Amino acid sequence: MYVLFVEIDIVNPQEFIICCRTFSGKNVTSKIEPLEPVTEKDRQLIQLLIEQPILTNAQIARKLGISRQAISERRKRLEREGIIQLHIFWNIVPKLRLTKHFDIIVGDARDKEVEELTEYLVSNWKASLVWLSGQNIVSGIILTERENLFRKIIRDEFSFVRDIKLQPVRFKKFLGQRIRAEPRNSQNLDEIAKKEAIKLSTKKSIDVILYSTNSQKNSINLVALKNRRFHLHTSITSTDKIFENAYVHIMYGTYEILKEMIHSKRKRNLTRNLKIIFARNNIEERRIRRLLRLAHHI
Figure 1 (cartoon, helix red, strand yellow):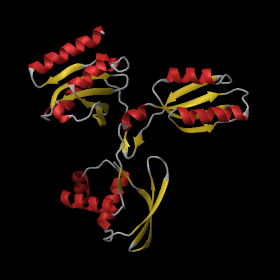
Figure 2 (figure 1 turned 30 degrees about the vertical axis):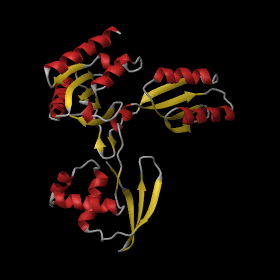
Figure 3 (figure 1 turned 180 degrees about the vertical axis):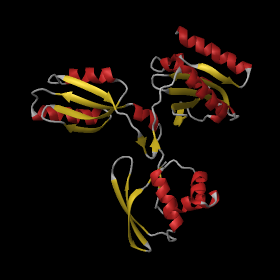
């Protein structure tokens, strides 16, 4: 995913001042002397990436009427010269879904008490923004799925808090990608999961694929178990995508890692709703079924 500058001031043909806003919200200004001049096609490519950061080389090539290889070379050159930068953000979609707006009504709290509350929110919770809405309300944006715990801890820590209101933030677009929240029933999600599992099953490294769905959250969890030779990590790795307007969270691991999750009190609930959607052979399927039965009896 590309985070690109939003303003270009051309000082002279050989020098650019690039102002970019990264995901962290910080302004970055850098001076760059490109080895080659930026062409009109380069500018068109950059504009497309600003508007739609997730475009592939093939899609850009079709829009600009040049070959995919030419687009690949241009992008690599622009990256190398620092005109565009490649940023990878893991698990963006689920994090957006966890974003909440909060209002904390503080009653007749003193200025010092309100300052302590705001500092606590910034330091101890994933609060990206905190501000004062009027004299008696502390508002902000927080990343959490544990709303009841958030309310309980804030009330316990700060006796002057009168009420806490939390409301999900509904995003329509993020970094060029539209986010649609279309309700799906379990059957729809099962069909989407099967399509994604078929694509994953073409990878020879994957022995078993499990899945679970959540129609309320319009989400699918896929667990792709690999042979230990192909998964060099000691824990689950994951990626996320939007597929047919559903949120798809894909986890990669091994039989041994799944077994550890089942024996972990904190992670066990993640495994109890899993069902097998693909198995490379009967032996793999039988041992995973035994493991899933164990998850329900522990």
